[in-house]
Image (cartoon, rainbow, N blue to C red):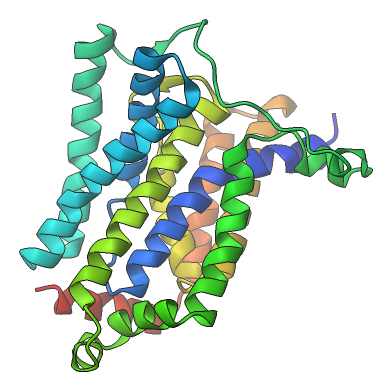
Length: 306
């Protein structure tokens, strides 16, 4: 078995999707001056809600919609406390992470009467799309074809958000709301409304990320199954400087490391060692590519939310 082959890069695209979707949501919040540390909790809520929706409806697309709705409602807590109540965004985000972890564990016992994980062999996951013409291209077709629709949606969203931020009037208004809220308000821009919209859109993306995780990558839910992916998404947002294409590039790095950690398990390496790889790379990336100006912007956003 080769280490770097077609299946590794195909697995990378599948594994990077939850990280990329959540990171794009984090980038939207950062652009309006809100440093959303609650991506982990939002993803976990989406993953659990997708399984619940599938359990009750038996339809995978209704399950995805249900996951998005539940995550949007959960994200409203972050929006209300950080925007309306002017609470510390870092504290609010961490609190939501703990709340999501405890709530999903509790509801797992209430709804499914199980502990640890829920799996149903009859549960249908997200379909895989074989794209005509693309699948016939040597190597590239094997990498890009045969993924769930949410994988392709994540790629389209990264490009679409790049154009939206820097090529549209609404995008510039959104950027202005984060760069200088006072000046934006003086121009008649409704900053609070834009911030609420950004957080809700972040909830939509995190709901899709969770659905991809529990219905796309696997068809089950386990306690804490996000396993730090929300924090990795947060790091990808920071490394990409909240630029959608930069965020996508950073997410691909972490997705590759995630896929590589799974591949190394086939080479008789200790499982605990290989599972460390994505998190070690995350720490190293933060040390090498750290940007003080971005952290100053994060602190400024935190101060402005008080």
